[in-house]
Length: 360
Image (cartoon, rainbow, N blue to C red; front, side):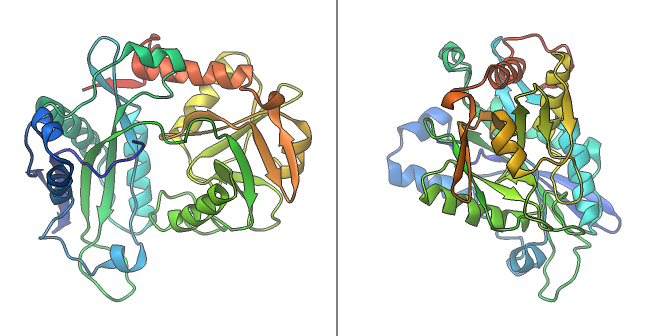
């Protein structure tokens, strides 16, 4: 399933006007989840598609014409005890506010973000739109597990000239989501495309950033790779990110390295969490520049992190015809330990000693 446009019916919307945010909830057409599942494919798809249209929003605007917008991605995960909980929404709230301000929009209040994210999941769950926990997910470290994907995003007022958005909308929708990467494919390759440049918007979760990422990822997929890896814009030698995820390399020395944050790298929330989990285990973690040559020659393990990716091991990395296979092509011990720890906390099979999970 991965991402799905079968969005849940309850949607949050806020609009900035006269120096204030006005909030509302919208209930889109729906039946019960059981009734929708029983519909024939054509009728179900038609009903689902109707939830993706909003006739009162401007089509021609700074977002649709110039990509001037930003978004977030976070998950509500079914818990072993039967509940639902959202992973670190406070961090997404802070990043979304910073992203909007970075694009010269009015910032969206963090408390409003939290209320909207939690409320959207709860209101939809009350209608039955939510996944149920399955114990079988534990057998593959939750690689096949379902969750609720929460997508907050900005949408500008009408406009055709190149200008910043002063009166944007913020929408929060929920959709079902499963594994992002296809099973059995974990090879990565570098790309000669440039994701972000200094003094650009690489540090913002801007909609426009994902154009290059989409092109590069699909080019890599066409060549038989699961993922692409971007290098820096200045020298083309240092690792930066994957297509939509941060990257880590564990060196043969035992040091775990991830590229240092700057204006070309997104400050990932899963990245931040994995750094903390690794340090808890006594691992030396360095946020610094790491060249592709160092990664190929000294790498013992490699993995990418993100809301969708979780902790996804990379079995090999190819650059200009040279391929490094990590840990004999098998998942490394640290990669597996960090993946299992993160998923255990998220799905409630391990204690949340850090207070990362917010109950819905």
